Structures are given as structure tokens and as C-alpha cells.
Image (cartoon, rainbow, N blue to C red; front, side, top):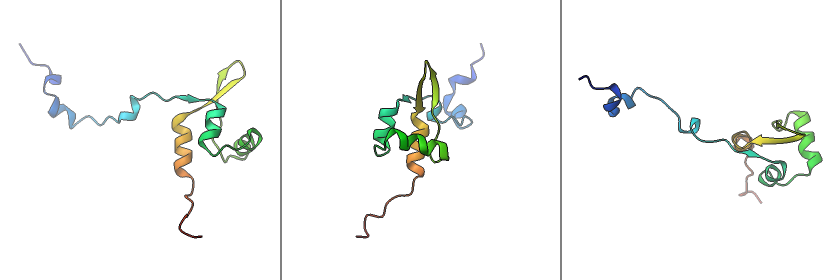
Length: 88
């Protein structure tokens, strides 16, 4: 009987380049939670940023509801310039 290639996992592992985030679920954040994460701008400011291309647009959930993928919001937060708190 021949052994399966998957029984020798250490050898197979070096050939597999699978990122963990592919297996993680990406939550959908509603507007209130998004606003809290990004500094609590007003609803009008949030949509103004979207219109100007300064913030990612939401995904349509149906029935007039929208939300943002958590990974997209986190990416936007990480890409923002950091404030220099040492200068005062």
C-alpha cells in the first residue's frame, strides 16, 4: 500500500505558502462601529470622505443597509499618517 503525500506533512509544508488571513473570517462592520474606530466623525463627514475618495466605500448588504469589511477599515487606519506626539 502506497503512502499518501499528505502523511509526510513537514516536507509538504515547505511547498505550501498559505497565509493565515485567507482562513480568517472578515467581519462586516456597521456605520456606528466604523465611526468609533476612525475617531467618531459625523455621518456627513464619513460620506464626504467616501465621495472624495478619502475613505473606502461600503458594501451593500441589502434592504438599504451597508457595511464595511473590517480588513479594509483596518488597512485604511494603518495607512494613515501617524501623529508625532513628541513635538509639543
